[in-house]
Amino acid sequence: MKAIQYSEHGPADVMHYIDLPDPVAAPGQILVKIEAASVTPFDWKLRTGYLQNHFTLPMPSVPGRDAGGTVIAAGDGVTEFKVGDRVAVMAGVFTQGGYAEMIAADEKHAVAIPDKLSTVEAVALTNAGLSAWIALRTAEVKSADKVLVHAGAGAVGGLLVQLCRHLGADVTATCRSTNRDYVLGLGANRIVAYDLEDFSEALKDQDLVFDLMGGEVHDKSYKVLKKGGHLVWLVADPIKDRSAEFGVTVTRAMVSDDKSVLQSVMDLAGAGVLKPQVAHTMPLSEAAEAHRLMEEGAISRGRLMLTM
Ligand SMILES: NC(=O)c1ccc[n+]([C@@H]2O[C@H](COP(=O)([O-])OP(=O)(O)OC[C@H]3O[C@@H](n4cnc5c(N)ncnc54)[C@H](OP(=O)(O)O)[C@@H]3O)[C@@H](O)[C@H]2O)c1
Image (cartoon, rainbow, N blue to C red):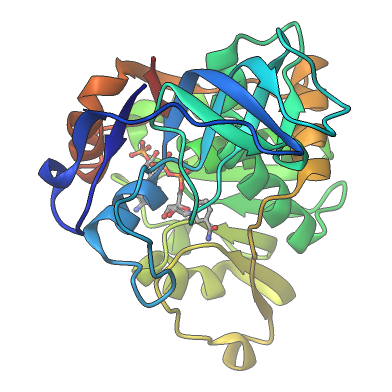
């Protein structure tokens, strides 16, 4: 099969489009012919070596935290899926990733794709959906909560906007001014355009803030929370915890692969409640260029997808 692989950390050029032996489904695994995989910020941060303190990657490595396609073989003991089923797969950090034409995945790391979704749409919801849902669960969002979602035009932020509105929250999102209508269309009640306004001057008394940016955005977010408010963050960089100073709670959302969460995401999308966000698709062979675009911040309005 064709796959993207790198043998050392470094710039996007360390990724090569190569031939690898086809994987085989072990007992309890399905073999999936991949149609699409997401390109996530995690993928390029892992590739550069930026996350080496958190993850010691086995080399060589095939990147990609998710994938979707059609089951072409099932190992002994597989009960949930059969050949021909369309599935979305959560790919491990330490095993083969989604940037390939095939993947052997544990049955417990896959869910069926609802008929109403294309495979590309379902994969765009996979890692982003897990992240958004776990952040939402961490925050315990309630109806009428005043919620600020940073990076509302991003893959995770856009899903958080939709999920918070679905729960009846009053949602403000930050995004660049050109994405205002897009993020309002996802369900935000109001927008603060980060290229025109300082959100920490424009907002106050929020019950919850989702920080998907870190750094200065994290630091300023304390100021817009009411006393007793909750700041939930999910970035790799360390934060300066100012919770005691502001009388708020700060919690890191611990994102992990969870089949029941992914199933819930797919159910909501299948029911038309969650709208998948696909920014752009590129062929697998152009993965290095896809990483460059992500690193430059050139991707907006959802996931950049690789198709096989
Ligand atoms: N810990 C975890 O397990 C975990 C899981 C998922 C994600 N994350 C992290 O969460 C972050 C978002 O992930 P993602 O997949 O949603 O990324 P993404 O799709 O690349 O979105 C990034 C977004 O950031 C926005 N942005 C840039 N500067 C901003 C600012 N100053 N204020 C507000 N928004 C700004 C951009 O908005 P515009 O397009 O409007 O400019 C862009 O849409 C990443 O840092 C990622 O590493 C962590």
